Amino acid sequence: MSTQVVQQYYEAFNKKDIDAILALCVENVQNDPNQGDPQVGKDKLKAFLETAWAHFDEQVSELVIMANADQSKIATEYLVKGTYYNSKPNLFPATNQYYEIYPTTVFTIKNGKITRMTRHYNTKQWLDIVNPNRS
Image 1 (cartoon, rainbow, N blue to C red):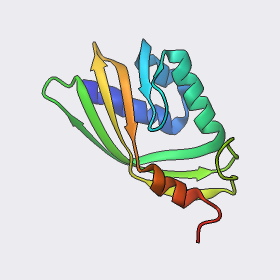
Image 2 (cartoon, rainbow, N blue to C red):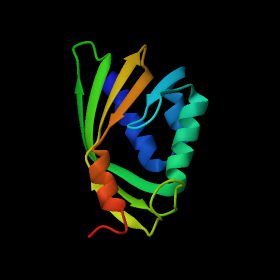
Image 3 (cartoon, one colour):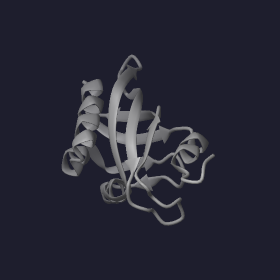
């Protein structure tokens, strides 16, 4: 059942359906981004996603889902194909840079709801790809 929640999360992500994503989470969901401080609460997750989607157009594919025995921890690896289309403060100018990266996310699930998400990806690799001045 928990793996289905995670599958639904990525389906909603690809549709940019924030309401569907939030419905899968507890009120005090913890979002641990690849860089930065943990963010707690649906309002923070909503703001995180809105900010990301204002600058990046991403689709997830090649999703692999792995779970521990009781499905309280779900690990995922996936391909993100994205475009950096709108300049984000403190980042390189956006010139529709296309990128592909393989992140991982670990989900904690309790009573059928996401309580925590922790994302990891190779930040240096991603920055090298989107840097318009790369050689």
